[in-house]
Length: 162
Image (cartoon, rainbow, N blue to C red; front, side, top):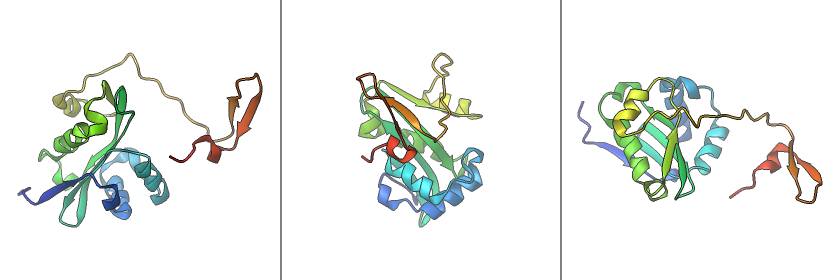
């Protein structure tokens, strides 16, 4: 396949959420059934966001979250099934890693179920010593007010807008 016309974008405003939802449903078993509203929230709160385009069709996507110096995470790496095996996934991840919010970070994390070998070729290493997860219940969160008092916040107030 001729890939000379494929373009990569770092512009969040270019994300087409209907196409993103379709791409995730087609090529990412772990992201099926995500709503447009939730995808919009995830993209808004991520940087960098990288999209891959074949003219007007979104064929790839990934996003990152970073503090810019110590830790970062790459999320939702996906390439349309028809375009897999052409090096676009590697370039997608490398584009995210070269972004100023990621390029100086001490450690970049990602989670994968079946693609360990793919990420190892990019330079990631298996790290069994730090993997932990907290399943958020999305109910009331208890917070300490520092004076021994405890307050509860409804879920929508747990995270303040940036």
